[in-house]
Image (cartoon, rainbow, N blue to C red; front, side, top):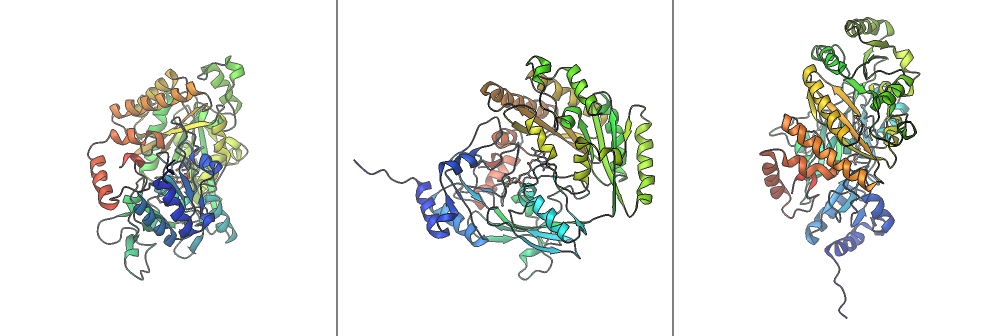
Length: 506
Ligand SMILES: Cc1cc2nc3c(=O)[nH]c(=O)nc-3n(C[C@H](O)[C@H](O)[C@H](O)COP(=O)(O)OP(=O)(O)OC[C@H]3O[C@@H](n4cnc5c(N)ncnc54)[C@H](O)[C@@H]3O)c2cc1C
């Protein structure tokens, strides 16, 4: 009998073992299964193995070996991309490069110029703790997702938060990147040897390259600067409930001037009832006789239990003292109450509610685990994010709401959505929650996502970020950009070793 030839992955993994040491390479079935698992309708995507580099030089060595052996890599930093992919590669059999396990240092915090330099594994919880140890003089922006999620990975996926520093890509500066051919590139002013302004001057000299490494497969980022905000002495949030679904239109009309005129410094969240109480409740099958989606009367009963309406509006002011923020709160209160439909909830009252406290935490740059309760709404913890843009126009918001509700209801799912509003557009954070253990429901969730994607594209709205199993389809809706990205991919990654297929780019 002829001996079987080792596969390219096997020869690559044994070369990596030799170069990095045996503990930096893991191919055990338990690890491969864990890294392939995700929450998405498309199913698990097991890698061929997992590598744990400890330095930029080791990342370079891995990339060079991948070129030699023709093996595809998948970078992950903390792999907490819940509802978007977790640690899974986009295609099964890619080798996961887990940068977070060993490259997890806060390299530097500059308290004068208010920035931090992080390695890929630095989590929101870790930075929050370190800033606290230094007396909370500086405030970071955080997501409302997992505190063990990472700052660098979230930024590279175009993640966002809620404070004035919500735009994580916008607030990052100076990347160190290992290119798919193994060279190291420093972006912004960092391209100058000995640069003293790498983490300060974002746009540098010449064309701006940082964007090439966001939602892409053109480099592995090994270090990043992130700007921080001086922590204001006083934060006071405000909340309003509105009773009816159609009030969304009026809410958008009320929110837009507050953001266009920069009256409210945070983003303003407009949270649907199920998104709010779903953090604390599980689907009440006993009340619906096992039926889905949630009947209107049960939905009403649940929101009333939590003192909510159909919508919850929230935002916050910062200032040097209580007296300084009070007039701003009064102004916003008068603005919303003139609608005749809003009910005001004060900061002090909101602090007592777990459902409302989530928002105070995120406006304070404080990581919270409470919103993750949404993943328990349906059994089987399936979750996938549909993230279209919505213009800040009330009529359009209501049209989009009607479209989403119709498609979700037809497929047996609830409308669970939070509009995160800026001056001109909001990001409509739909989370599609389903039972991933039930094959029929999982398949239906996939169909539902595709129906949403198609309907929004036909109406002229695209998404900002896609779960792994829908990236190819979402990219295929665009014109021109996929071709340019493909040309860039061939130029920068001629052997196609870095995450081929990510965001539909090969
Ligand atoms: C209830 C709930 C609330 C959430 N709220 C928010 C929210 O408010 N804002 C938000 O943005 N998200 C939110 N999320 C989504 C998600 O959980 C977070 O964004 C999370 O921070 C992302 O995962 P991560 O930081 O561990 O990054 P990772 O999973 O490590 O990486 C994310 C992506 O970046 C790529 N990547 C990672 N590291 C590198 C690298 N070094 N070089 C090149 N590419 C790399 C990966 O391939 C992957 O595609 C929420 C999720 C849930 C369930």
